[in-house]
Image (cartoon, rainbow, N blue to C red; front, side):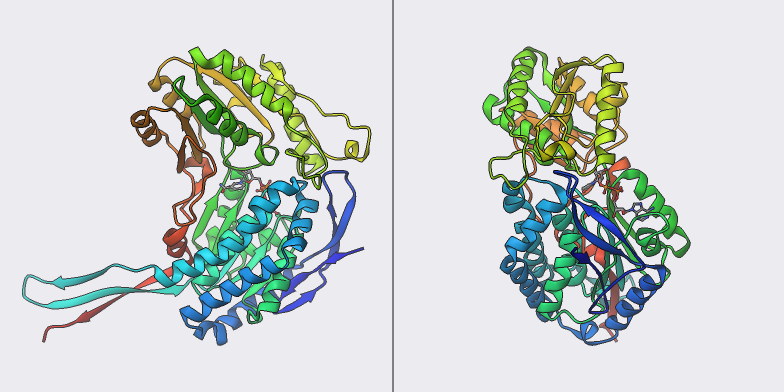
Length: 486
Ligand code: NAD
C-alpha cells in the first residue's frame, strides 16, 4: 500500500500514525497517510525559520521568480501523475481536472512569478510647511513562516494559489492539505525537491483539524500568519486558535451564492453558464450558485430547460472522459447533502428533479454519488435557501423587479460571489455593483484573471488574494523616509 508521508526540512518522513485516503468513486483505499505529530510540527516550524536565515532569505526576486517557473515546469512535466492523483482523491471528472485543476496548479506559480517582478509600490515626495523635503517609499519584506490550510474541493488549485504568492514574497510555508485529499500536496513536495527549493522552505504536514496538524499549525507561536480556505465554521475556530499569538489571517470561506437571470438574457448562453455554476465539480466549488432568481416571465421555461440539463449530466466514473459529474467527496459529506435533500422536502419544496442516490449496479454503488437536484417553492427563510449545502443542487425562485432580485440575493450572511445574466449591459453593471459580494460575474461564471481581487464578505471571508492583493497579504511593508533637504 502506498504511504503518503510528511515533507519536513527537505525529507519525506513518517508520522505518528496512519489514516486512510479513500477513493470517493467506489470507497476503495487509495493510500495510507502519515499523520504529523505535534513534535513534527515543531520540527517543520524550526526548519522553516532556519531556511529564512539561509540561502532562501538572501535570494533575489529574479531568482525566486525563476524558481517558481521551474516548479511550474515540474508540475507540467508530471501532469499525468498530478491528474491521476487528483482524480482518485476527489472523484472529480478527469476532463475537468485536466482542463482546470492541474493547469491552474502550474499557472499559479507562473502568475505570481510575474506579479512579484512587475508589482510596484507607491512613493511620496513629502514637503512640510517649514520646507523640509523627504522621500517616502516602501519595501516589501516576507512575513516569515506562513501556515497554509486548504480544503478538498480543488486541492492542488487552492493550495498553489496560496503557496505561489507566499514563496514569491520570500516566505517559508507549512502546508496542511485536507485529510480527504493529501496526494497532490505530497507530489508537489517531490516537485519542490526536484526543482531545488531549499530545505525548510516548503513543508507538508498531513492530518486533521482539531487536536491534529491543522490546529497545531494555526496555534503555533513560530508561525507568523495563517491563510485558510474552507468552511466558515472552521475559519471561526482558526481565528480563535491564532488569537493568542495575534497572527494575520486571510480567510476564503463558504458561500450561498445567487445567480440572477433576467428575461432579456441570451437564453442558451445563460442556461449553459448557470448549469455550470450549479453543477460543476458536483456543486463542490465555493463559487457555485445554490440560489437562482429568475424573472417571473422566464421562470417556467428556465426551470424546464435546467431540469433537462441536470438530467443530461453524465454521472459516472471519474476517469471516463465522458463523465461530467463525479461523486461527492466522502460518505460524511454525502450524508450532509442528503440531509438537506430531506430537509427541503420537510420544508415544503417541489422537487423538480433528483433528490436521491443514483443506482449503478457496479462498484460506484459503494461510492458517494448523489443525484443532481433542483428545488422550487421554498420560502426565502427556509434553511435550504439560507445554508451552504455544497452539492449539485439549487433552489429556483421567481422575481418581478430588479430591486426585489437584488434584495433577495443580498439576504444572506454569506457574501462570496454572484452572477447576473442579462443582455442589458447597463443593468448588468448596475446590479453587479449592488450585490454584497466579493466577486460578481456578468454573463459568465468562474472566469478568472489571477491578477484580480478574490475573496468574500461576511461569513465568506476576510481579505482578498490575487495579484498584488496576495502580495499585500504575504508581505509586510516597511516604509522608509529619507530626508532630502539640509
Ligand atoms: P473544512 O473547513 O472542513 O476543512 C478545510 C481545512 O481545514 C482542512 O484541511 C481541515 O483539516 C482543516 N481544519 C478543520 N478544522 C480545523 C481546525 N479546527 N483548525 C485548523 N484546521 C482545521 O472545509 P472543507 O470541507 O475541506 O471544504 C469545503 C468548504 O470550503 C466549503 O464551505 C467551501 O465553500 C469552502 N471553500 C471556500 C473557498 C473560497 O475561496 N472562499 C474555496 C473552496 C472551498
